[in-house]
Image 1: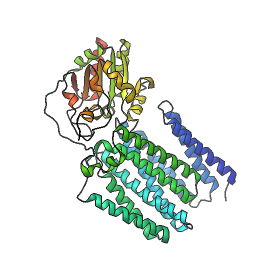
Image 2: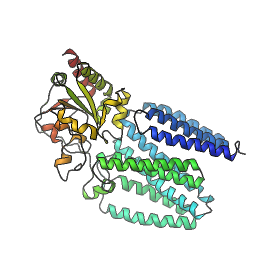
Image 3: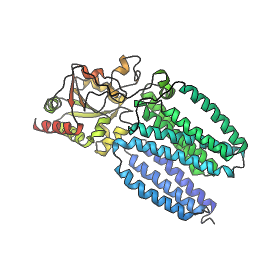
Image 4: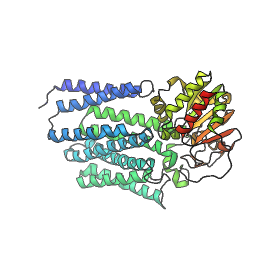
Length: 457
């Protein structure tokens, strides 16, 4: 028996839906992201409590046990996740959401009694399954449990076309016949399709695919809202689907490519692929003291952070160096590329963790005109987002991608572990320019030495 009236239930769901909308608004800015996250969590909590109050649930003991077990496992696990592993965590979240929606729809098939219900079930099963298996592969690629190179085989595109046709036919049969066995086959087809879609994607394209899968998970959850006649799932899923689609398009534009090219580019050699090849061309390297002199006598410094900064967990040291330079009257700003790191906003979150003021974080369009007036551009762990091949080398995997114009600065300093190429697997000609100095080593260690030298100037 319901513990609340339908009117109260509707109001609680409305409150939760508004909380989700406000959360999404808050997450659009680093300044309000923490507040937005808390508002979203509150909305989710209200939604869960409403289900317990409004529905006649069976097996409550098992439900509470699973919730408790999930809490016990997830809280310490999330606290242990490093900033460099955040994209993998997001990929797993995507997969779990899509997989859960697909399983719920499969179990609800027996209750189907209308055409619209059956269409929603078939859609949720197929899209949710694609999201689950695709997200598992993106996790494996980012975690380097498998190669980051595109995985293709002869005739793969034809297999995908045939599977798509069969899946559509299977979805029609599920809608017209409502057979559990057919729905299970559709789920298997979705799982295989997810593998085939993501395996050909490599290197720097993986974060964009994560965003695309996030949008697909949102659509699956929205459809499951129709299956379960739950308005909150419908609203929440629609928000995730819409925002994920917008983010995917924005990231693709930042890469200078279409989403179709990113997904299917490997079939014609256009997808970025990681590489371990190291060039033996000579470069100019320096010591921490050399870099400290360049920085200490500059008037304007632009820092370009990248994945290497996150790997070394050097964001705090980087900010200490920035403050030491500012104490000497040197202007320091951070240039943020939209796809720096392994996911959108990765660098913003990383630097916010070190309490870097939002005012000195400048997006690509804002900071690019300023490089020509910068005395030093300090590139910390970034490579592809400053690689001039994006402008000068037609046929390059990143050709056409907007980049940060680091080469326009009077002096460029690269902090790198080695000469290994970036995630896109191509050489960066900027490393060999006469105004470029390389400082090899772990970013945290080298930045600490540079900081000590700057303070002694």
